[in-house]
Image (cartoon, rainbow, N blue to C red):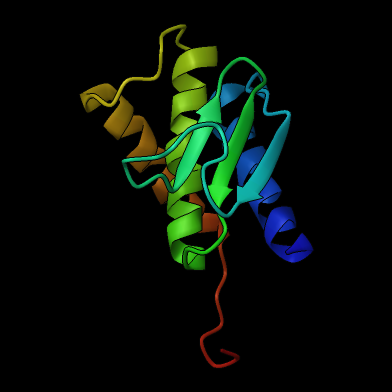
Length: 115
C-alpha cells in the first residue's frame, strides 16, 4: 500500500507542476473500502472533498482503475482550486481529465516482463 500511495503522490506532484504551477493543494490521498458517510446507491470509485482537499480512491479496484480515478479526482480539484468553479462533469472537465491521464501515461513506466 505504501508503494501505491508513493506512486500516486508522484502522479499528483507531476500533474501539479506541469499544469498548475504547484498551486494545486491536496492534503492527502486516502484509500477506502466502502462509503461511510451515507448509504451509497451509486457506484463510488473515488471522491474529492473540496472543504479539506482530500482525494479518496476505492481500495478494491484494479490499479489501472485507481490511477484513472486519481486523474479524474485531480481534474475536479483543478476545476475547484485553479478555475474557481465546482468541478463539473462537462466538456471542459473531460478535457482536463484526458490531459491529466495522457500526462500520467508519460511518467508511468511498466515492465510487462516482470509482471
